[in-house]
Image (cartoon, rainbow over all chains, first blue to last red; front, side, top):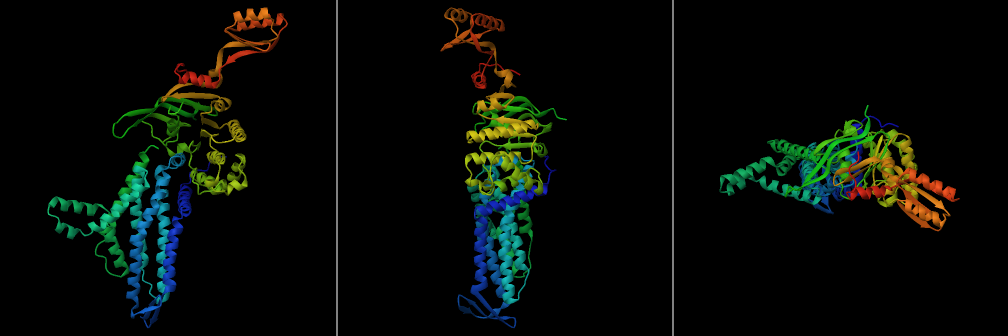
Length: 281
Length: 313
């Protein structure tokens, strides 16, 4: 029996399925799923909203009522809180969980077998990367779409901004995952990969306060360093502002944080692939 | 049309330490040809460079110099690896997969269609002696022997033309070893080239037609097992040899052993052996055995490793 001709798509599907299988086995997927489900149940049963003629009569949480307010405003504010929780806490958890999934591929005894197959190294790593993004994306979409439907049903508010925010969140995760991949390829260590990625996640909101920092710094060179770091590193904080504005239906002043972050992610991922391509195992 | 399943020319791999820049030549200018359809054993002491050599063949490790071809194609091309089935030594199969999942996954990576995989997997599990229970059992629950069997099935999933096996019977009981050997023999008859890397010299001697011995990264010896183990003398073994004749034959022989009425003599030439046979027969002694002396592969290996053997190509 001869092997069938190369079927790149079936190899890609196999790699993605393998990542999901591993995420299931490591309880990563189910852990996220449980957290998202808990939040959705909270929104579904604990928060009761009574709407009278387009305005909210009462909002009841744990049996306590709050004063009435505009429906759309309340929904958008709540959605932006959910989006921010998802964006910061969810991202941190996702990075923590995904580091192991990336490093697992490079384990001796496993990588040799993968590399011995008629699949290019770039294809192997991108397949794993895509699988990892999809594991996290599935939960983000589940939570965002679920809460969007709950809010829609309870308040008849169906703004698309909240749904769009999930794309930005997935996008930021994809960029952070590129860092995990690069560090993983360089050092085979999920611990180092987590440390580097978390360091970037912590530094970038600080750099987002660029005008204030520049005022505080006395020398021009140190201000230049801050500027370079700000423009080079991903702008997680600025993207969170864009997400909030999308949900609140406010105009987006600049898309620079998104495209410069995308550029950073693309360069880092390309470096990871290049290094993986050249590396001996 | 390629003549060889594996062909390397001046293959070299140098590892350099990060800070001191010290060099280690793990594979040093190895040129090797493995004919299509042969059973070839790769031997060498620990750290000789066998695994690095195999990893270059599979493109897991990039060579510093030289070239490695499989069926005439550079192994760095992904497509060149399509006809290869590989079982690594210290494999680490994903423990969250069942035997079926694992074969399905590696089958898909080998370019097989879903339908072909579904048909092939049960056949293979049965071939390597794994039952239906093993099919749906997670690999984390497999014994070492079962992992080795499913690993072999994984290497065979896409019906490769070249099988590269690193210690295939490691951790397998004697019955399992025999089963694996039978599978490999059947594959050999189908024309599959088998490249075996094993520490079990008796296993290699039993199964391989050709061997190569690597030492300190260099090819120390290669040739057919028959040729390498054939000795330079002849032996004659007679029974019920009279005392006077025994003394005479001992004096003529290069070496001898005597035990319970049986006399075993070693002669340097065929003529000496024939004369001994004539003497024994004319004295009414029975000939128990006679033939060319042979070395075991272990003896050849030890001689080579100890540096007593010059390179023989």
